[in-house]
Length: 530
Figure 1: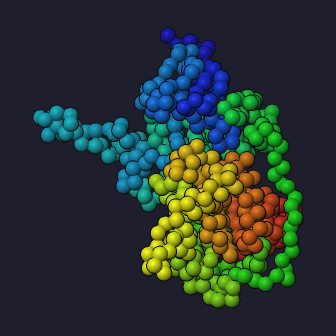
Figure 2 (figure 1 turned 45 degrees about the vertical axis):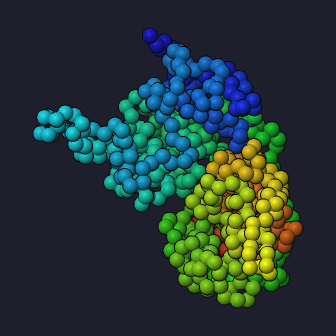
Figure 3 (figure 1 turned 135 degrees about the vertical axis):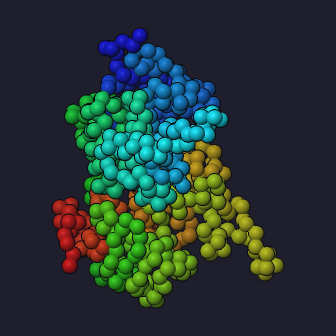
């Protein structure tokens, strides 16, 4: 019999090691119905491992299980598979989507629990010939969508959806399970626009009011403070703090996460490039990119500077580099070093020595099944014939394996890429923050004259952010590379840029030196550019 006074969930003295490396040490946490717990920590702090234990994931069982006990309603449980966790009312939405692309949102929401109808044939030949009850499927999907409090179209096919709606489909799928009592959300807002992220926070409040407990893992600490009632901070496999959310602040959490004080608004040496020559000039640029508005961008980039491009979601900042680099259809005029660069031809940009680190690291940034060596060296080999040995006067070209390993090792060391398997490890086996560093290393290996880097710190933790930003700054200073950085986080731009251009309504609303007060940039973000 369950003890009604017992908490919904208790995890006691949880320990876990992977192949002799201790990743979790003596973790304790308690959760009551309707609690919203913010789980914070740098990449590699152990948050995802802890959730995998709770959710009965195979990887835990296959690596020798775990130590400690889990109780639900005061009863000890041990989930061997996610199905057992689901039966006990625990749902999980992962960082990587697990939706079936050709199916609609409604079909994904009720997947494996489809309501069926009897028909004449199944009356004779048995239940296996029942047909799907599409009205009931849509009804159930709509109920779940309503429960979630964010409208998505149940009839839309997954591969036609914007990425934010896919995330909401996953959440609706969990909410459609009648027995759901605890939902784990792992980095759910990393792919959402600001408006969608707000809607998700509302949706979490909705669930909490209905008595569903939520464990919310995110690097956006202000979201945790706005929606959670408890905060647990992990570092190196330990719980370092367990506090009520109303007794803490972003600064405190950051300090506990990294074990050092991170000065976010670090004043740095903002340099004046007003007299420098223009290396790139953009005139009347328009770009046709879903979710972005770019309609008349005029911009001059000075040689040697770090220029930031900021602005609210959907206003056009991501469209600018994607359009110039030829990933989406674009028009207008772009000149680089005095010569016009034809639009809609990515190879021409690479040949002109312009590199791009995309915001979509999994979609276009990495070869996930290949090694770090191949990821880092391949573009330079393909575009510039680097890392090749030439024989017979260049008739035969052969890969220079040693040069490839050396360059990879150089960037692994420089960017502190955590890859226990060394430079031969596959990209997909690294954490998000480390994958992001591989994308940067790949661009650095091209030794470009000009680098676009889009959302370089999206979905990575505070410590990794500092490393990535410092690497960009160092690359700019030491190699003299002109850098244009696009980011949703103004403070991040202010940390390393010389100037920041703000995009509003598809146009540049204004450009200011990076050390101007945040309020001035805020005013540009909401201004309507004529």
